[in-house]
Amino acid sequence: MNRFFITIAFVLGLPVMAQAQTAREEIEQLPERSGGNYLAYIAPDKPLTKAPKGYEPFYISHYGRHGSRWLLNDGEYMDAIRILRKADSYGKLTPKGKATLESLERFYPTTVQRLGDLTSVGERQHHGIGKRMTEHFPEVFKGTPDVDARSTVVIRSIMSMVAECEEITAYNPKTKMHNDVSNSFQYYLNQGWEGVVRMNGNGRARAEAVAKASRDYVHPERFCQIIFNDPQYVADSVNAANIMRKTFDIATNMQSHDTDINLMDLFTIDEMYDLWKIKNIDWYLGYAAAPQTQGVMPYSQENLLKNIIATADTVVGKKDWNGATLRFGHEVCVMPLACLLELDSCGRVVEDLDKLDEQWVGYRIYPMACNIQLVFYRPKKGEGPILIKALLNELETTLPLPTDNYPYYKWTDFRAYFLKKLADFSEKYPKEQYQSRPRF
Image 1 (tube, rainbow, N blue to C red):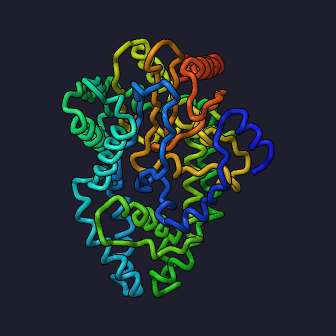
Image 2: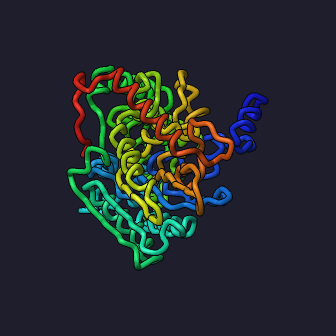
Image 3: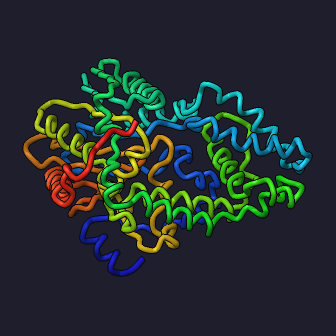
């Protein structure tokens, strides 16, 4: 850690921490991290900073992704099964290949009519988040708190909302809980701006970069050797890179289930790391402040951030009031929102995609059940500024604002900074130049 950072950290009141693990080290420690957005939520083990002297929390503004789920499409399971079935019919599978096919055949029936659904693992994740929310911030849920919870119209998000709210009402049965689900909320709960993408040619830039990364980082030779017993059959009849990546997606999403099926041993740590790097590049270009896509992608969450600010404006001036606004949706919103808010390193600009893994790590932002919580504090007595702190996956994180009392920032500074940021973007990209439509 360089002297400049230490000095800045001291001035801003930020914690000066030891060098963090690299992504390669983290994946070796827990190979499931290589699944990226399939990573099962890891409950935090770090204590939170005490409230500033004379202050107490009174409001939480939250957006969270649904918990662990089945894969979304039948083909994500059946494409690999069909390839292995065909090879098996010709006697082209090794014993390891046969065992892999047997595992997939055994698991596949559980996916019928469950594609995209929340799993029991995902349900437990949200029960845990809700329970810890009440434990960490009991003042927010004391008395008769007002809790407004809204979800996208997707069932896994609705069920995640139910699980989290169950914990809050279990903690305090007097909670005035309001749950709502409607297409009318989609414009901010599940929003993407396809027009900005088209206007800047970002779709092509992203596709070309991912295609290059796939050529550079997919090395299926060893994988195919342990699955298939005939190299010539693989050369003539199998898309080796395709079967490797499809099997990898199934393997990394097995952590979403209570099952004894484990396919991770089909891959070496180096292969897992390389396959993860492709996904990391794809998500960075599609949702982060990537210069390759003109840095516009986080602004897909303009409506969500405006809703966060506008909703907070309705409650911060209320005396003797406490409660929470809970929003439930998807990682395609949490991830760009974290980048738009510039939480920690989320907003980092990286020119060299070959070194992206050293500077921007997606799975730290968007595991299953990922969430952003803005916790508001007010003086217990007398007057004083409203303070906030930001939690990313329940861990305290930095905001791009001055402070002499990290992790606490002034709400007025937050509000002014981000409203100006959104206004500057709107001036550069007037809305009449593109169309904004919900992402369902």
